[in-house]
Image 1 (cartoon, rainbow, N blue to C red):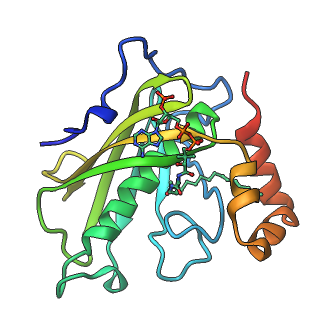
Image 2 (image 1 turned 90 degrees about the vertical axis):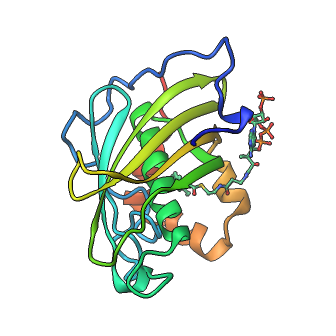
Image 3 (image 1 turned 120 degrees about the horizontal axis):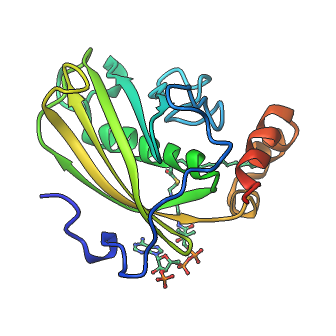
Length: 194
Ligand SMILES: CCCCCCCCCCCCCCCC(=O)SCCNC(=O)CCNC(=O)[C@H](O)C(C)(C)COP(=O)(O)OP(=O)(O)OC[C@H]1O[C@@H](n2cnc3c(N)ncnc32)[C@H](O)[C@@H]1OP(=O)(O)O
């Protein structure tokens, strides 16, 4: 059973999500939002190195290859790592809305064990938006994009301003990010909303 919590059900006045006109085209790689991110950053050797690709509407696909560093039980992915893969995939959807948002709630179902070496094929979409609240859902399948579901999640993301990170992040990383022109460009791209 998935999405059982009432706070993950969009209210009656929620709207359908609207893809930002400048969102990456279907099939295009989204790229990392931060090179030190555990989920998508290329500079984290034990990270998930998740690569998300824009889909139609406000949807995307991503792949995560389970490495030995991601084990919980011998030869099997750790559940928290799988939840991170879902969180990262769901978080990447906000790029298509061009909204900066953080996870408020993430409910995960673990349906099948996920062996080390396997590729988790993730599919995610935004289902509704209500004010600052973004509702989304994702699945992770084994053996291919049409394979059996191994994990799934429903989530609520809450829109924030860049100040959320500046005010709460450790000063050394914030300073480094603000001195990195690529990082500033990515943050500005998120901030420009129609
Ligand atoms: C230079 C730097 C550049 C940086 C460039 C960054 C690029 C972009 C990076 C993105 C990174 C993504 C990475 C992957 C996704 C993560 O993993 S994000 C990390 C994990 N999440 C967090 O750390 C969030 C921690 N929580 C918080 O900071 C605060 O609780 C929040 C979520 C901002 C909400 O606080 P708030 O703004 O005060 O909002 P609040 O009024 O409490 O709630 C607003 C609404 O949401 C509802 N709500 C809030 N929390 C919840 C909840 N847990 N359950 C249910 N409903 C909730 C409230 O009930 C309220 O509903 P309404 O009354 O409007 O109907």
